[in-house]
Image (cartoon, rainbow, N blue to C red; front, side, top):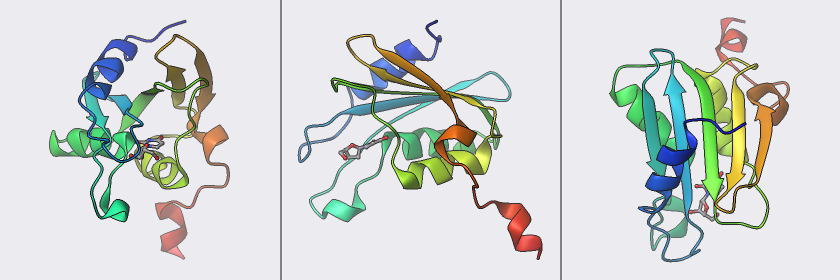
Amino acid sequence: MSSDLRQPAASVRERAYAPYSKFKVGAAIRGASGAIYTGCNVENAAYPEGTCAEAGAIAAMVAAGETALIEAYVIAGSAVPVPPCGGCRQKLAEFGKGDVPVTLATTAGTEQHTTLAELLPGAFDAAFLEG
Ligand code: THU
């Protein structure tokens, strides 16, 4: 099963700015409206200032006025599908419910299907701020 998020994720991956790691990543997320938002990793000579593909896609969604995502797709040119980093799991969980499907993919065509809850069990969320 290949999501229609694959093509936009693969396309934006080509624009990744990754001169240091040489590891290009693309992400596409579907907002609750059905609109698709994309992002790629953007590295920096000051290494910790780099941003992940998922962060870029989330920023595009929020900038467009949406704050709920219903599907995510992440693609890299690796031998096996690359799991999102811990920070990106938390960022995705801010805007998606636990049952949101997430596909991790390689440019060669391998796909791994998971969910936000599987990626980040026991997530800290806004409910904990209520006391
Ligand atoms: N990276 C992402 O953009 N998303 C992920 O899910 C994993 C890692 C980026 C960060 C950095 O630019 C490069 O991949 C190597 O870590």
